[in-house]
Image (cartoon, rainbow, N blue to C red; front, side, top):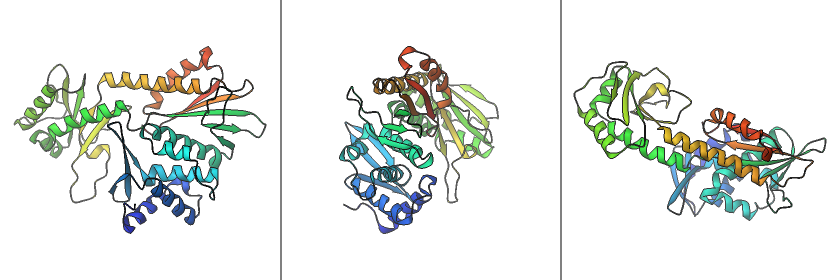
Length: 341
């Protein structure tokens, strides 16, 4: 079933073709890879916005949205380059690419496959089998014959930590959206920032709505404690968002083109401490899962863990600490990806 118009197809192809990761491909392969991608996801709901299109996958009351031209099509290109353009993609791989909980890991392992195989020109095998029956994602064979088994893990954009923050953060943004307080602050060159100690409650949202309706005029540098959980501050709109941080922003988009940058954000909400702790646990669990997957690699080989996560720099001390433990003796290193940050 075709879920798109010819104009939408052309826009997707234009976005896909502009990516650095596929610059080396001929035009006929780009079109073929996009066609394969659209065929795989033909039975799923698609949401379009300009040249961007998200596939929406629902499973067990959870929803996963992945962009076709920017995320899925490049992964399909990597897979077809590896398995052969005249070959059908393995059914097991297609099943992983259409199973919501597995998509983030699978896209990242195909990204790593493309990097090692096409950028570094290594000889790479996909999902080699170990004596314990497990299959790491990749096996790199170096020119000197040395073997490196690679396990790829991704925190993903639609994990539980992000879901909780998006729900709570958007409730806070909506409470002030269009309010006198926020509009007047923006007109005077200020951005409203909200910080929370815990997930926002109905009382917090009500307090923000009432403050937004009030006649209060914010001045640069003002800090207001709404209650024990939420506080509000007025900062210059030219000030950058505090990083590294989990945050969500709102913009007033009118008839003219608006860049989605810090300087154009009217309001920003920062995550509460409990979410950072939860994320740390998730990231440590990714390391543990990857280590277990590599436990049975041959003694004369090396192991590598590639992790795609938010706030990768903050996780480096945890990775260094883990690598010093005896149960990580076969792991030569951990490669952090900051592409989600």
